Length: 207
Image (cartoon, rainbow, N blue to C red; front, side, top):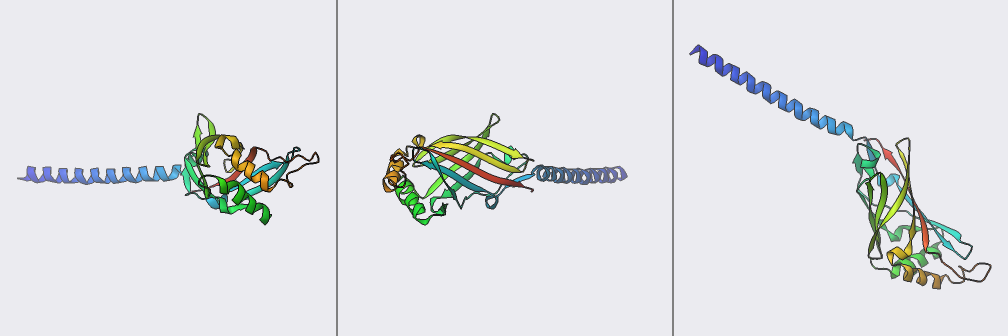
């Protein structure tokens, strides 16, 4: 009888110790996962600027999108935090410090495109290279990005978008018509260029 009681006691102690070890293992695993998340991308720390060009002298016209929507994205490395970050940009947030120009861009450029309300996309990182999968005018294309990360915190992403790749030359022609005289250079030729420079900047915050 004593042997049976002693054996039962040993089994109970073993079960308790096993349970404690399992709980500790789960806690350690959770803590390890939390500790590896060091970088967070937040929309309020991110801005999108663009530069278009007019006249044969290629005079720059700068602007930005004041709103960039995406959920906070976390990662153990800057690359992990940025990879697969999906975003949405409302065209209504376009801003150039010129109300008349803003309305022309919204109505005569984006307004004649398919799905004119938003630009959407996703940042991708593969084979040590970044790109943005951008959907505009109903067309989805990869846009190669030149990315610079300083001190593993400040991020600059630059790219040149060719509007022809998004079937947007019709929209460009529509814009040039309403800006015909404004886009004339000294040679009297009105021109709106197909390439647009894009620059996205953000800051990778601590978890």
